[in-house]
Length: 331
Image 1 (cartoon, rainbow, N blue to C red):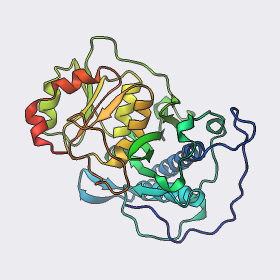
Image 2: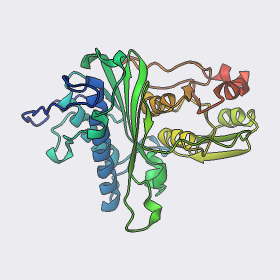
Image 3: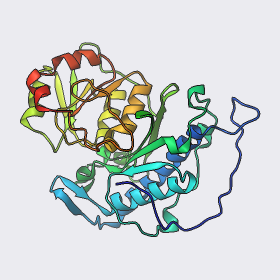
Image 4: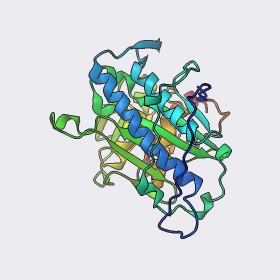
């Protein structure tokens, strides 16, 4: 859905000019301000997701079937993200997963903050002249909805991806329930962010021990095609979990060496933010043929040729994909 709130509450914008550490005379560039805002907006959305869960009524509806659900958390988190970004950056194109009616957004869903730490980061000069209207933001307000409804809270993420000229260049992944198994007094949630040319932050980068092939794949959307592709890799272990954001976190934290999904189920809002974060640390994410994804505003939302990703040794995993699988999945 194209997220363009039509009846936002009007507020006078107050522009606080920040002095970035790398310049004495100018405010942070647009991309820096957008990523800094997306960081805070994702954190706000995470609090919405947690509040719905603690309230007990998830407001579950089926979209296309029992494995394609929407909850009140999906709806409210998307409203919060889209309205907050549109208020600060009115010329952005914002595309969200949920098909929601245009309506007035409650003021308590609006996030006005920015990450001060990100505003201090030096962004590469290639981003200096980007215009607001040239950016496309892809939003998955609650990635892993089925797992959310089943209480598998570590699978859940909030995804905000930023694309320029069709390429994923920056992303934010928030895990609303990170650390939830640590006890009642645990501080919940963390935010991972990344920008091509800078790196990715908010986690400790780890790799699977050399020589091991651990595949992470879908938990609830498996098929013969998916399983045939995985079998061709001869994995030492297969980890079946929910959420594209969660799977990419497994890659960058050394819990898996490849993400294999030989199916057309994934969408652009699932992959934009994770792709940017993975690419920023030297990994690679493509479709099952090895083709890069296009994130222009007018592209089809479905990643019809599946997903293949790895932090290291991508070419090995790509070489193992059977021709029969490639022929079955048309880009």
